[in-house]
Image (cartoon, rainbow over all chains, first blue to last red; front, top):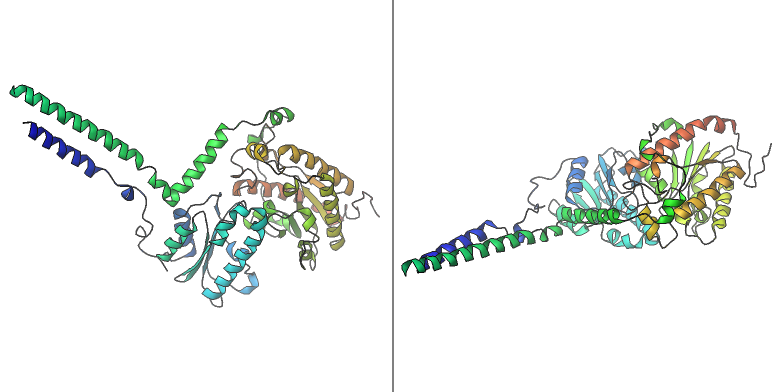
Length: 166
Length: 287
């Protein structure tokens, strides 16, 4: 009888263990498997990235400002779609998404993104040097027909996320 | 005897079950910590920490006693933004002004802004193209100046005013007839003010604003005080206006842009007639 009771108890214990999740199985969303297909528009990319990546700053999605911020003038004739998620300027955090369009090839847009980051580094080096690691590890990636720039609180996460679509 | 064995066995079973339950509860609690490694959880953690600090912070006694006028900041009605009021307007300033630009809240205006720009770097910053160089080639009827937040820690505040006057003189020289608007320095949050080690305090904000207002009176410029939405009863920036206590988010920038719109629309007549255009920084009005 005693052996039966001990066996019964062990079964119950095993049952508890089976119900629990290990830390790796917690409710954390799996960034690489939760999205089945790459977004097909600049806005969709922005929605995805702003939802998945962490930011220290208070961020705002601003329509129609990405091109100007990255030095593309009206007369340059850029007609691709773009999207911008920008900080309060307390930090250099931002997401910019540009659709590759005519003369604005992936290389050209990457060049503009690098120039933008260089300007930001120049500004923040003296203004908020503690923010420089975010700029130093900023991510510029071409994903399909889009060039994407990420400066956030965890650029490694941005790199991982974008790599899954590259 | 058999009953005693049964009771003993059941007691052991109950003990083991209780132990298992406690262990399961502990495992459930521990799961909260690994979750912090995920991006979303990191963000939440930062926010919670900041909120905790704000909730436990009490404004310094001096801030509570110095501020005299009663301010009904939560009853403020923002002005509508009229993009037409920003035509022929240039905004010169620091990161706060750049936020207005980046948020696209002042359509039709041109901006000469830089993160961390101080007034003494406008005319000369050690490069071939200091900020002032951007003003050549186009005539403006209105110039808005947003300076002071980065200069609050200067040991000699009079130098701030001296540089400010020189910049305004230069802008007037380049743009004869331009109407000049100087934005009051906005207060910072009580927490930022108390923690600042670089002079960015609300006491200095009040001191510098008094000097800017006096300067505007002397040189025939328009001093634009901040709206009551930007100050709480203690004289500090209201909680929630700026995540870091200094830089406004979109909502407050929109209020600010509405105020600027109202000021600049009201100044159209002045700008058109050039009423303050012949006034120098020495306060001498020329014919």
